Image (cartoon, rainbow, N blue to C red; front, side):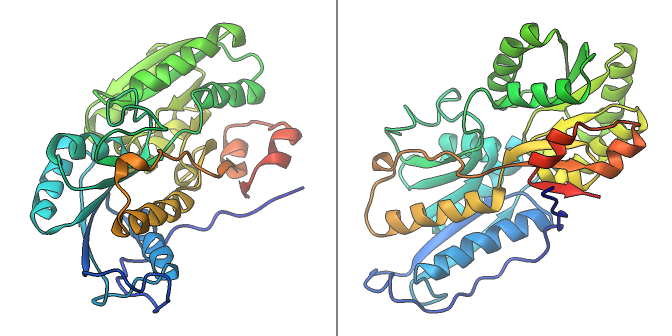
Length: 326
């Protein structure tokens, strides 16, 4: 059996890299503004971008300057952070659908690399994945429209008699339409009824779980987004307290006590983005860089949570998991 214990993301923002030769010849010192969330996971992600840039030959104060702004998980906060960096940045890197939407609104000329955007075509960030057509390009969050259906299938595999599934979503999150379309296509074939439940802020989440209880939900799917990620611990705790097996997009939430997740390797996505930063610095226009999809997906399972919920997980599911918390 393949079992790997999940190690929490740690670390802070570091803006220093060893000198390599591949970036030699880049003329000016580029200023790259990064707008991301807060917390250790965000710090580690930025650190991974910086590490990969170092591999490409970028040295602090020699050919690149990095300035990072941390944002709260709401659109206004992202807009404020982008606006503060925009005057002094040559290139922006933004994370999440909120970051992409804010950058599309505010940045009209300078290049933007987005990371972890659910459906960039659907929400109007780019014209198509192969031909972005503007000043934005980057890395999507989902590799295919069927990913949410696969998350629902995982819950059905765990609970073959599952009938009612709550779908927790941040209100007005641009990811919701894309996610619900995938879930609604899959639900009839799986014999599952979906109960979408929206919340606007951290203080609303407890009430959302009360609504799930009133609706007799038997399990929970959480739609990926910056607000649900930022409140991962509360969501995991409440799901366990309400005896709801939960499926997530972020393995970080499984480390916090969620039952299972299927989603991309976030650090790998930041490493992908470093290649785009390098290409843009060297003169490639964002419109010439097709939007990439995640190169690696991970299935994570928390066996301690399964035991607390009284679930005997299928051995086949545990065997194929990339990350197993025991």
